[in-house]
Picture (cartoon, rainbow, N blue to C red):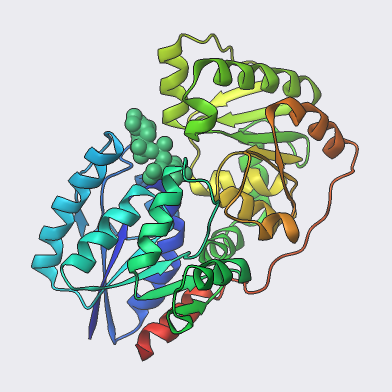
Length: 362
Ligand code: UD1
């Protein structure tokens, strides 16, 4: 039996791990063990996702919590090394590009345990993003690189990675979307919309948490001003990330929540999926949401100068925008002048099965 540690820590990791855990747990030849680093610890950022994704309680919880990048990464490494010593796994699987990803991959490699990286090869070519450093370091030491698009394969090959390590398996986040969206019938979906006081296509959904958008006072205040203007054209639902909320409070920015601009706590996975699928458009700086909106054919306006997910622009519904052009782009969407997009190859709900097949052979 192969023992696999599945290491996760932050919200965007959970929906990438859940489909793999569920396939591996069904197989007699694998013993999957979930390790939660505790990078995200609020109920809405973590436990609510475990519940929606029908994951068991993590077998290990490292309680790393917040801190500077060095502090957070170091705390995770110290605690994860002890888990590796105790569990002696055959393989550590890491997901995405958060601090937990890089911390656990480095620790595993130094303990001479093989590492598999799910969602490998993405590059924004912008080293000012902490995630870009995490991606490059993790990919450079991983033994198995599971990718979801041709551009990811190309990035790895360009960095000198052997083709033998690269396996294009598709987008595992779409596996979770398919399972969870498939379990919500239209009556339940309508109930969720009703709960938020909206109907199909008559509102927009906003998420913002990247340091480049929320860590400077002037920039954050300007962005919130623009959102207020957008809300006059189309109701805005704005589930607010703790980082953004904390900064608004610390900067002393006034923000009033009203019928048109609705500020809310972070949503559960099920709620978010339903609101995303039925939104007129989504404005975001998230990575994963660019992919989910492409899957749902919902217009996505990404408030960033670059993306590590270019396939969502080339094939999907995504466009990069800057804050000065945001309102104009919203008008384009509302006038029906947005591309329809298509779903990239292998974003079909079968990624976890394909990964498991490869893990069986290696
Ligand atoms: C992290 C990831 C980012 C991902 C995001 C999704 C890194 C470098 N960044 O960013 O890629 O898109 O998660 O959410 O790993 N906080 C809470 N409760 C929580 C978690 C965080 O209040 O459950 C607050 C803390 O004050 C913390 C701040 O939010 O200092 C930022 O959290 P952190 O995990 O450091 O980074 P994120 O901004 O969430």
